[in-house]
Length: 485
Ligand code: MCA
Ligand code: AMP
Image (cartoon, rainbow, N blue to C red):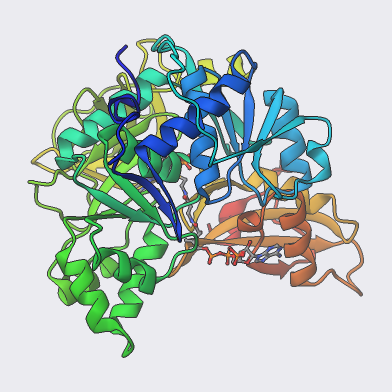
């Protein structure tokens, strides 16, 4: 395979090197990123796997790029991960090192893992790194399933290169593009598309640290050309466009962008139309998954339609399949999306059973997403097979992991978790709880803190509903449909 990040080599000895990444005041040019990542890569070469404390900082970019250059798989960690989830990820991925910014405080769970501080000012030159094999693992990204703790999706270099190049083709993405976003760097959206995407093209990215409509407007009015976000962010942009303060600036900024891209969850038609009405611009949707990277996307020269995620990207085979495995032909029929192509992961770490179950005999990945095709081949996602998966703020969350966490609370006798429609988050997590003592049930805040501390803040229930008993069928199985799912 040719280099995953060719721009790092092309510009590494130039003094007029262009900007690669910007986090607030902290910028790194390609030359600086090449120098810092080469210095770190030399120190981690030969490590089995490295964990990266993935704060939204330039240090995280240096750490991940160093791992990629050294051919060492990187495991990005959510810095807010709770004790239980972090312990699971560390036990499962057994990193030999954790890379973190100097001064960053790490939780006790990482005490047993050797720490290396990332020095973004370090420079090493002329350190030659052979490009690792295309099939070798680049990243292990943890993603939730319906039951049990998250699984580590192993993403080879080949998949990252293929998916980013398909997006280059679809969006005419070039080194002249300047991306702005505020996505977390421990998931595919923010890290692969939002950081490695610009770096593979030789372009640049400005990360806002924390999402705000003001930050988006500021960057788009000062050179940024593209915005990536989850629907919750577009919902908040639509709200800000309605507001009195700064709406004029924001309107101008969004109207002038080359491309506004939404993904990770469905963009509500209402928000799509509000933004179109206010700015004259239609948000482009693309559809992906941690395991598959990107599958479909509205092209830059295509016509974005609210509620559609565009046609399959170059190299991606996509089919809709009935319950009995029959492949559906033609527009209108509803089936599960299955995909095959160079964009797919190689499997779940340490989970051959789950990997085998995820693929069909002929090598298609079962996404679990349900869709129809429009007559022009645009994919329209209408739901998903599993009711036990919740998408909240663009994060995928398994009902089972939250139920298990709730059951660890002494005040909880029984628990069931569902997702309810939410205008801001897409879905909000609802916990149905039978208290151990009906006379003094645990409070909503207490249970939210409990789940945030064990798993992650974005997995906390936003609503707690107390019940005397959970609805169960004759076999004792909880009937979530009776809870309004
Ligand atoms: C609140 N917080 C707490 C608690 N409650 N902390 C500890 N304990 C608690 N009980 C903290 C939070 O950590 C956070 O801290 C703040 O309070 C607000 O939290 P929250 O309300 O959850 O956040 P939000 O403002 O509603 O976040 C909205 C968001 C976020 C910014 C849109 O959901 C987000 O970043 N989503 C992106 C998800 C994503 O990237 N998904 C990609 C995966 P503080 O205020 O300090 O931050 S999907 C993917 O990769 C595929 C391939 C794809 O297709 O893209
Ligand atoms: P994750 O496992 O976090 O990578 O989430 C992947 C899931 O996000 C997919 O299986 C879809 O259900 C959902 N998803 C991603 N992009 C879109 C989109 N544009 N529209 C609807 N759902 C999406």
